[in-house]
Image (tube, rainbow, N blue to C red; front, side):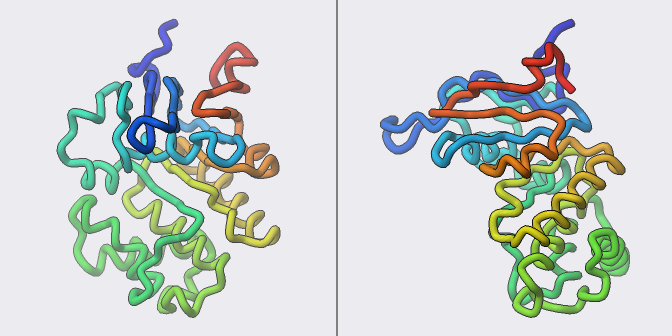
Length: 236
């Protein structure tokens, strides 16, 4: 059985990234494939390159070498990256990045303007369905400043699902949460990943977060040093 871009939803092939002026090798020839509906945790110490790798996987940054493929197609050849990201990938960040002047319902609708065309009523209805899904229906009309930290992260998760992506990327999604809220968000990730058959890639320094995943990839000094799927002899 082959094991290349065509066999994965997302595939990073020998990706290199250097900062600044080539002095720091953030990524040094990383190859990583993510199959549909796979739950992957990427771990390692601060500065090991895990967040840089996530930025490459989500096409938030360009590699200096190598290629990233989505459904077997090289992303370097796409010229509609904003549109592509909005339609195909959901993002969840440690800092939420909610727009402070918008309500929760309005924040969830933001990616929909780059997605399939919907009427304003349809956008609002979709947002309400997603807020219900993450337990935030009663807070739909509140702006971020009126929400707790845990509530903001749940709104951010609803926003990440706005266009029904098959890939969800999360960078330290529980980093700003207390243990109770962190567990609630992680439970949501697990349930959504199963119910929606999402490919989920979570970058974390937390062993507890990593243990939720089906596959754990460990990085150090810009390289992958272990992969639990490889250790078992097969991808999950």
